[in-house]
Image (cartoon, rainbow, N blue to C red):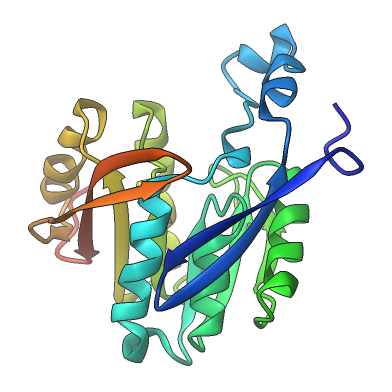
Length: 223
C-alpha cells in the first residue's frame, strides 16, 4: 500500500485543553492487508502506528496538567506513532525528541505538527534496542501503550537507565490489562520507584479503555 499518496483522513481529538487534528491513512484495512508474512516474525513490523490509542489521549491530558514541569525541559517520546503526545508536549514548551521504529508514522507526525501549528519535535526513526541517544540527556520520558509485549521490557528498562537524568521522571500510560500488570513490580525490584496509578477512562476513534498513568523515578538500582 502507498501510504504517502493514498487517501487520508483527519481525526479530531479533544484533550490537553483544545482540539487536535491528527492526519492518518484513511484505509486502515488495506494497510493491514498489505502486511506480508515476513512482517509477522520475531521483529514484527505491524502498523500499530496507524491507530490513535486511548492511552495517548490520556497521556496528552497528563502532559497538559503538568505543563509547568515540562516547559523548557528535554523530553523523550517513546514510540511516537502519529505524534499526538509529542506535538502536545512541544506546544507546551517542552524540547521534545520523538522516535518510532517505523518511518511512515514520522511522516504523518511531522505533518501533524504543522497541521496544529506547533513547534516541530526532533523526529527520529530509531529502535530502542539500539538507540543513538546521549547518556543522561532527558529530564522526562513518556510513552503511551508501549508495554503490550513482554519482550519490550528489558530494552526499555536499559534505555531508561541510560538516557534519563538522575533526577529525571518517566510517565507511562498503559491500558489496564494482564500483560502490563507485572511490569511495575519488576521495575520496583530493579530499584525504580513507581507511583500508585492514576486510573481514568480514555476514549478515541470509537474505542474506550481504562488507562493507568504511573510515574517512575530512579531509586537505588540493582544489577
